[in-house]
Image 1 (cartoon, rainbow, N blue to C red):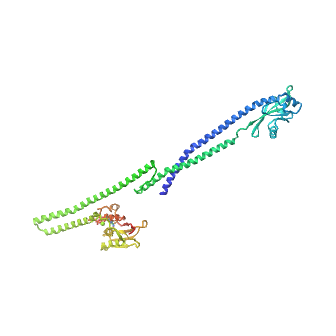
Image 2: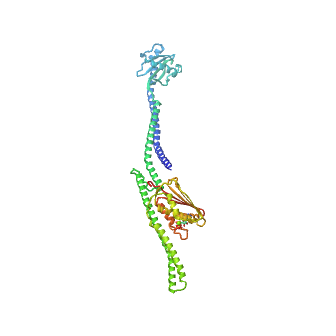
Image 3: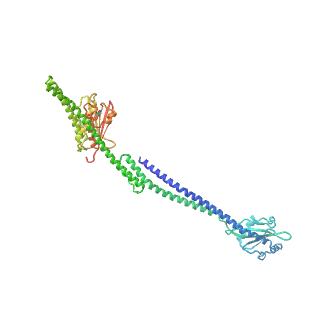
Length: 497
Ligand SMILES: Nc1ncnc2c1ncn2[C@@H]1O[C@H](COP(=O)(O)OP(=O)(O)OP(=O)(O)O)[C@@H](O)[C@H]1O
Ligand SMILES: [Mg+2]
């Protein structure tokens, strides 16, 4: 039961955490997605911008290449197959200038850079077409190659003799352009973004578990309180320190249990009063019953005496015995009732239940011959605190009922004492093989004045119940109509007895 409640509280807590997590997941994930999109977009944008920038650089370069290729000095030097010097190259600006002869051999470069020359060789091999494929006036732009973290592309134009149009070489102009940003930067950015998002998510789960605990703890306390209340523990007090709605709820709960407690007490008092009222009414009725024959007899006697008629002695005999019988019944009734009504406080002293039960049997005296008495006294019965006289009276009443139930048929009366296994208290069972009783009778058994016997007061078991209650004990009954009845009495073992 307890474990069940705990798991249900856990379930509620994890449900709360899940909801919180879901709530933080939505903005985190959408933020990551949007930022990723923005990163990609700006990188693409930068790529477009950088491409335009390069074009801006490349366009004037191609015009310069045209100008270089048509330079008469250079063409002249190429025709004559002379060495080409800086003087033959008239171009200014920060260009890399390369010239090839008719056979496609590089015959001039204006930089003395070995690394550059090496790179150029691979560029010439893979990207520059052979001289036969150049058409007059066409600018061939090679793809860019990477040199020193920069990019180099060449604009190459055919050099031809103006008059004949005969090709004598190729002039190429190039310039370093800064590299475009690579995709590595973008990926790193996205990874950092996702890591931050995961961190934010973990922190929010942690915070939400703290919040969930704050919420579920007082609820758990209230649940415990209601369970205790359901078990009938009206003294349970729910302790919630918070001064928020939960605190108010706990206060109302405590107020409610307090109210329930006073109501229950009032109800108990009212029930007691009602029970006593009923007893008083029935008692009045019972007292009235014998009064009628007494009155009638007395009047009859008086009339006879006054008229001095015959047979006065007979009537006197008859009436006086009736009066005596009824008076006796009255006394018996009043005796029993005063026993119940006196309600003397029990006066417990240390005593032995076995001997009390035996005393009750002895008090009964002679049992009818058709009834067999079997006793089975437990050996390990501890001494306990009991009012021996009242307890003896209680067992006497139970034994008397059992004997009365077997009066006609005979049977066995069995009395057993022992220890109740679960509680360790003293247990006495009185069983008989008598008339048994109906379920209806079993319900009313202990109410004052319930009797199925002619001349019975119905107070016997009410007195028994009161005595057992005063000892904080318990009495229960099991019965099968026409067969048997078992009364079980539990008497607590009191410390210090
Ligand atoms: N051992 C039993 N077997 C069958 N019925 C029983 C037994 N004990 C009690 N009862 C039933 O319970 C009723 C109430 O018993 P209770 O002792 O209170 O009153 P009573 O015996 O009728 O009257 P009184 O005790 O004044 O003689 C009895 O009338 C009887 O019907
Ligand atoms: Mg009785």
